[in-house]
Structure formats: C-alpha cells, structure tokens
Amino acid sequence: MSTPLIAIFVRHSPECKHADDELYRRCNCRKHLRWTHNGVQYRKTAGTRSWIEAEHAKRDLEDQLAGRTSSLSPEDNTQTIAAAVSLFIADKKVQGLSSDLIKKYTLWLGRLQTYCEGRGVFVVKGITRELVTGFCEDWPKLYPSTYTRAKLRERYKSFLRYCYEAQWLERVPAWPKIKIEEPPTMPLTAEEYKRLLEVVASIVRRRDTAIWAARVRGLFQLMRWSGLAIMDALTLKRDELIHDEAKGIYRVVTQRTKTGTHVTVPIPPDVAQELLSVQNDNDVYFFWSGEGSKKSVVGDWGKRFIVPAFEAAN
Image (spheres, rainbow, N blue to C red):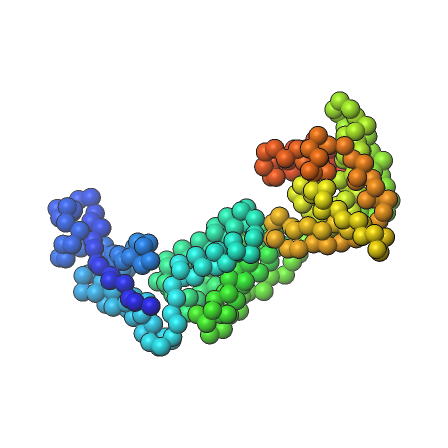
C-alpha cells in the first residue's frame, strides 16, 4: 500500500492576524494534518500548536500508514480502517443482505472508524483490546438494553473476523463480555396461541371482515409453523409454498429479507390449505399488495391487526 502524502495546515483562531494563511508556521494556533487516500480526504488534529511537533506527528502517522510502527513491519499487509469498512460493506452487499441492514452496518462501523481515527489509529492493525474496551465504555448509556449491546458486540466482532481472515489483523482482539440481563422472549403457550386465533375476527375493522380475518389468521398460522419473521411472512409469494407430492408434504422455500439466509421448512397440510385459500387482490403474494415498501406493510399490519390482536388476547 503506497503511503499518502500528508500535509500540515493551521486552523487559526478568529483573532489571529495570519488567519488567511493556513501554512503560516510561527503563530500559536492549532496544527492539523491532511491527506487523501483512495479518493477520500482525511483530516486529523496534530495535537499541538507547534509546527515542529506537528512534523513529528506527521512522521508518526506516515509510519503507521506505511506499516513502520513497532507493531507493524514493512512486509505486513497493512490496510486502513476506512478501506476495510468499505470492503466489508461491499462483501455484505454481495451476500444479499437487506438495504436496512447494510445501512445499520455502515452506521455501526462508521462509529468505530470515527472513534479509532479520533485516537490516532487509522490502520486495522492498530485496533487493540484496549481500544475496543474504550469504544464500549459508554455503551450502557447509549444502549440501555444488554441484549442490544450483546448483538452489537457480535456485529463488530464479525467485522474484525473479516479483517483477520483478510490477514490485516494478527488476531481478533477480545471484546468486553456482556451479560444479558433481560429475560428471553418465550414463545406463546398452546393456550395463548389458541386465544390469539380466537380474537382475530373481533379486531378486524374493515369491509369484508371475514376475508380480512382469514388473512390475519393465515399470517399468524404461517409465522407459527414456518418460523418466518413478520416481513418475510407478509411478503411471501404463493410459488414459495411448494407441494412435494412424492413425500406428501408442503414446504415453505424462501430467503430471509434481512439476512439473505435460505429457508426451507415443512408446514402442516391443513395450514398450507388455509394459506392457499387466503384471498388477495395480488395473486403473486399471499398477503402483500406488492405496492409500497416492505417496511411500510409491516408497520401497517402491525398497527391495524397484530398489536390489537395481542392486546385483545391479553
């Protein structure tokens, strides 16, 4: 990896009489570093008001980017954090992850990149256990749920594992352990599920109540027996319910919208027949009209049917 050219410049205070010259060396204003890599411009404070000390900071940064620090040797496959994040995101897109999850990964890794660069670490090999511990220090305040913190920890570790497999890291640094304090969400009991199905007709407030009640009940049955998340269930296509005549079973065969994970799961014949009898104006899908975003249909059904049904079933 070629070492970018790093320039020192000055951010003058408003009262400095040399404010129009960012290369003026002898004032007492703060010195900064600037360089471009892969078409992206970076800026970093030199942490000093002295031009001579800024020169030292410049050389230290050049060494880091070239892999010449004590922990890096010139023959190492040195990679910047910014480039590693871009490649990781590209890899996730190739895997077929949803755009929402891609946006979340971009946000999460952007925070890690900003934190590292704010502490003078611009290359992947500079990410240490001490650095990630400091990064996690304010998580209890930012993410009150221990479950959320544990999930985030796994997301960040997956990025560092990717870096390790690309040989940019000698080892994946250990992350602080997070004890999940919230009780796990348990599935409905048989009695609770029975009550849920019984209240469906009472919460439908539309014309053609019987048709809509059958659709809501069909959605619950699909989620119950297939294990699909609500977005995947609501947007399931009719041709993704396969009848295996040789084995005499029906099987849901699809991909998860969020992760791209392949799903194939058998469902009871009576549940399959109930789904096949669901009426929908769009004959491609069981439930979705095919209009609007998948996210919006989840919000609409959740507000109009699912939350009221769970509340009515207590």
